[in-house]
Image 1 (cartoon, one colour):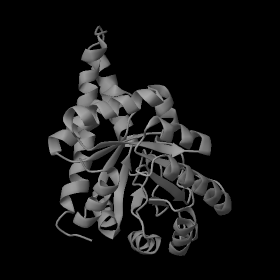
Image 2 (cartoon, rainbow, N blue to C red):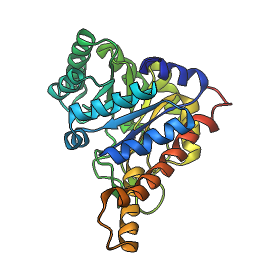
Image 3 (cartoon, rainbow, N blue to C red):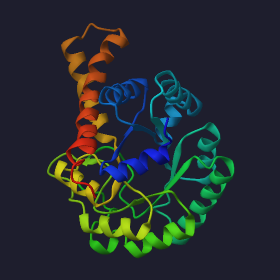
Length: 294
């Protein structure tokens, strides 16, 4: 079975993107895996610090590995948004396939320093593990937003600069790079999310020299996704859309079945609702843009 690195390389070659879907429980894992297997597509399971603390770090590793081994399937586990070297070390030692050190709120110098420390530890411990880092702040919450967060600036001067991306990658030795290109974490409850800067994505991919990851994919238009993939995005993160589907489905089921108390019965409709979101996104990331190449 191919590695995560090879999976990403193949995505780049064929002009598609690998879907990265965050989970908070086993229902979310079932929803993502069921769709990936149905479509015969590789997939990345993401767990942020809060999500993996809820599930259990060793437990989520065991769950994902059990699916990979039982089905001989390319399902990978990523430690999403990790804010310290200590917590990077924790997931590397636990057996994750990749990890993101998120130093977007730090100064560039401090971000480089800690990212480099993470890369050095990973390469010494297990070179197969991929390390990602971010440059440019896009917010920090996967939730429904009333407005663009005050600390997120979307003017051109605040987005990631291609020359800065090149310098950052060279200094740190990371495998994957997450830029700020008009994307935001979470999604607006009313109105459209900001458009992505497609030309900037092209320039950053060219200068950075490593695959690009788009965070905050929820709420992005289909057209922007297709353009972004063509421009050089190889992994796309979705979380808020899945959480929203989960909440709506469980509310509706309990409204219609107020006397039901069996969790496995309640959660069937929830899994189906999450599957619908995941399937729509995986098809978009992997098929609609496949003919156009990069």
